[in-house]
Length: 145
Image: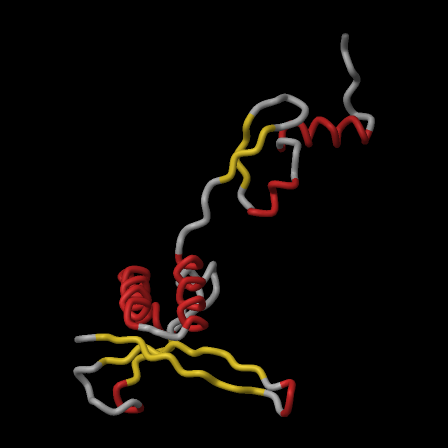
């Protein structure tokens, strides 16, 4: 089976408020040469569903879905000429990359701790110090000198 990526531009809205969006269709060129009959699925934004129902793409390709998506996007990126479509492909490739582990230094104990979320960079206190702080606020802990 030989798969390729075809990009369709869709428009919604009317008049000066009309906007366009791009849809990435995965096609099997061994099935047929014409579009509707060789359609496999749409390429999802994110492969990891995060506990949600899996997409048709991940059901079809299984464990190889991440590598297949990367391969299809990089191959299409090499052959594409339109700058808007190239930017969207690069954005989707970045979405396929795993999130890096972020380490932040605690302001209280000066230890580095690992955060789970990207927005946690704003959090400046580690979970242990946060528990101690909450106990102090409730009056359960007495300070010993």
